[in-house]
Image 1 (tube, rainbow, N blue to C red):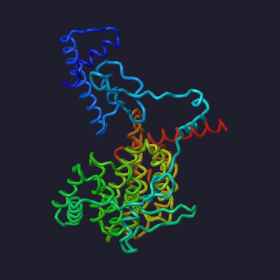
Image 2: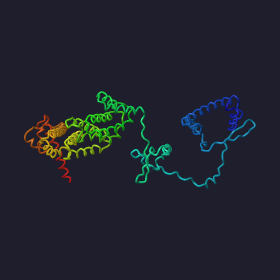
Image 3: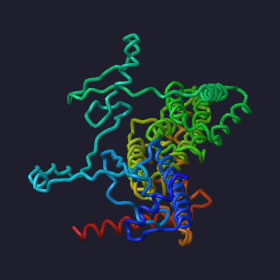
Length: 451
């Protein structure tokens, strides 16, 4: 027995209960020993969960609180507890020596310094993949030690900025061998002439869940491929399919890479030439790029409220620039139309008459290719007006009279007015253009009155 019955007798004598019977002291000693085992076992659980090998007073107090027992006071201190032995006639007794403290000496000691207030500061952990060498960031001691035995060409290049902050590049991202093999297999399959192999690779990109680390590599692949294959229509079409597959994969987080993906899409939308021969169907590629840009603006327009405005401004400059080719104008018109009816009302409709003056000249030229491109632009403008008409569901189609044709020509020009009157949905388009013109005039009159 660890806890002896003599200890029970000593404690009983100290509280005024002398001469306890042996049976009582033995039973109490056994019960105390059981309780001690129970508390120590619970305290060891706290010690193990705290990843420690030394049992502390705090562990015992936590165990007592779990058992709904009042904790022990006066022992939680940073100093080790020293036990002293007192020899008696019966057995050795151990006790804790209580240190006597002189209050006068304690009062004369200087007060400890007050702890500093908690404050929060912001700093750059990394800027474009480069960690600034500032006090808040950890010193790259391990990196310097690992590079000490390498040749100078392999060591991280240190950059001294104008503000005196020295920066070093972060550790390069390392792919596993499996992901490297997957990436090489996918990129080779995308260049295969077999459509089945190519579609299988695109399907893998669109559904695989374990390729998140490859997103930045695929985005870089798209940018480099578009830049180096501006006149290869088949390669550009495949690259746009890769962009769509990445965006469709629900397991990938592509929001941080949108600023790298959008320039490639805009290039395939408004570039001058996207194929070797102008007779190839590069118009479908431009339509697909416009659809993807519109989907991106719809998906990320709320967190990035200036995204749609910046893209619309870029497309408007391409649309109104008379030095740009008709292929660029077509891409700009289709892109603005895809961005929404508001873009048709605000950006296309007020400028369409002046643009038709330029387009009419191209339609009358003897160059067959220029005339075909001009007809494509005319069809894109007609598509924009159809989209405007679909937004006015409550309007009844207008009667196609000569007076209506004259009024429509004042807004969109003679050539486009003739195309509208020849279209099966011409009545709805005429009514929508008239309604949009009235709305614009009402807003202008209201602003004049406010001014």
